Amino acid sequence: MTVSRRRLAVLATAALAVLAGGIATATASTAQAATTACRVDYKISSQWAGGFGADVTITNLGDALTGWTLGWTLAAGQGITQAWNAGVTVSGTAVTATNASYNGAVASGAGVSFGFNGTWSGSNPVPATFVLNGTTCTGAAATTSPQTPSPTPCTGPSTPPATPTTSPTPTPTANPKIKIWMAGDSTMMNASTCPIGWGSQFAPYFTTDVTVQNSAVGGRSVQTWLYEGNVTTTKNAAGECTLSSTAYSTRWTAMLDATTGLKAGDYLFIQFGINDGDTACPRHVGTARFQELLGVMTTAAKARGAKPVLVTPVAAITCSGSTAVGNRGFVTETKNAATAAGVPVIDLHARSVALYNQLKLCPNNGDYTQGAVGAFFCADHTHFEAAGAQQIAGLIATALREQGIALAAYLK
Image (cartoon, rainbow, N blue to C red; front, side, top):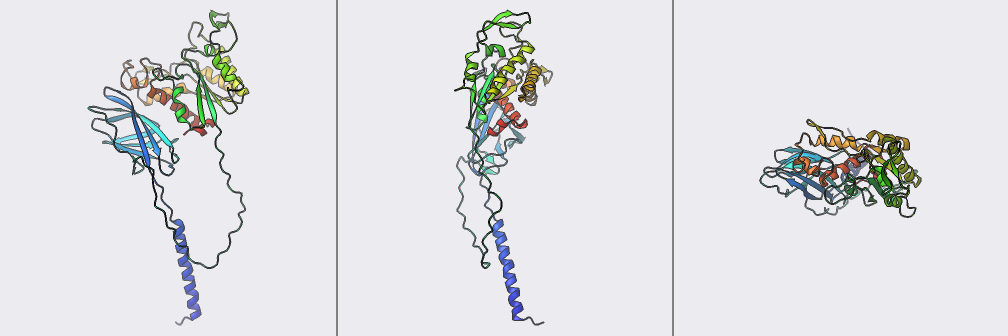
């Protein structure tokens, strides 16, 4: 069959157009692969005969991550028993730690931390090598070779693009700087040695846009915290400790200061209920009075534009056989006060009991100076070592995310 020259020219032009389109498509679909680079800081936070606790921090020196898996090799005699803020599995001597549901996204230059308890015998060395998402962590930032752009095929005169009809995406507004204020007892207070309150470990969970002012004090009920020095040892007819003056303590006065105290957008975390159950004054507080005083604090904070968050008292470690069980009062009263004030409540009592069961801290022999329970608690059943306080603070951070509390936007 004879094909005219004009017909051949048309076919050739079409073929070139298809070929050019193929080249353009291939060029457009070729994207530079994400680079992975990292530094890992591995710290043995506590160690006892046959056991230890460790904190691991990954610093992302490459492109932003949407999920992460960290691997390393155990030395002879080492094992892992519990972990938090990551899912950890062991196969032989190979360890794999995978992000939790809430900490998989790690921006370039940002960090993420998790911890675990383990066992050891003979020696307990720090791992020499860590591998993040298949790439060995060297501590150096990733470098990429400059890419030579592929030539754009000539497809004839181009048509100027049409003016977009949609509005450009606005640049996200950075979070304003805020302060978290804290009022509570010894399980929340700042300290560098036992007992260490969870409030002292709270700031590292947040970005630099957040500062923490921790005014928790050991041994206080909500009333003695508010009216320090003015609560007498005498009970009135209602069975409540009487006040010699209604003047507030300096710590609460400082929070209420119009210039330097609570500001609009700040948060106030309130946790009492451990010392309030004392039968004797001045610490004794009845259930109705307890709810009343929480209401005083939440109302004052809201009047200044701050956002109160009530927290039920953290549990001590009490075992029923191999199960940790609840042991605090004023849990219901804290929830009732939150409902009455219309503010969030974090049930730290229930969350801490669940954590103790997850870590298998029961049964134990009551010796809080050794083993996993000794690494978590001071030499009692109530107060925390640093490793325990960090995990309790982590429960609060998790609750912020799970309960949709707006402060979660400031978490790392």
